[in-house]
Length: 136
Image 1: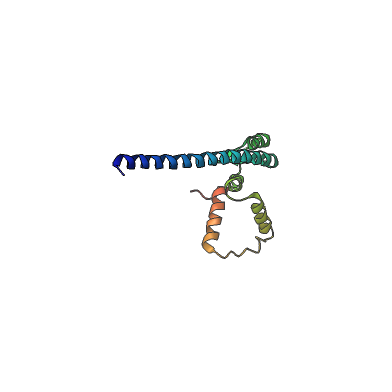
Image 2: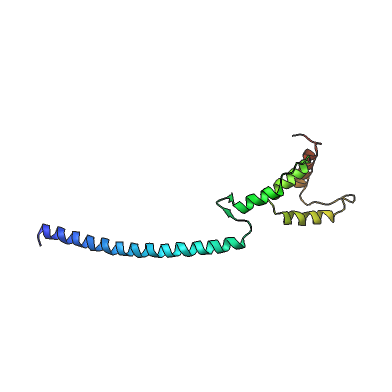
């Protein structure tokens, strides 16, 4: 087999391989289009059942409406600001409520024993700072 014939054969083999991959790619694209349509249907169906949705950390229109309806509130208590930011960013309001109930069962007049002295002292320091007794 001459060099020209070898080159033609290689070219022919490459073309066959390319056509085969092209057909496979077209089939995959068709499957992706079907999947995309199905995903969109599921997404639309799910959005009807969800009150608040987040997409890439951006609040959806429902969240914006809820924020507008809730209104703004001005407080003059640093403790309220602390709890607000805690519940908004770190801990669920339900968990805070459970902790509040647990704390209300304690009797501060008898004293409440805490097992980590350093943490307890820091907690008291933070309360003093928020109440204006201690400055940073």
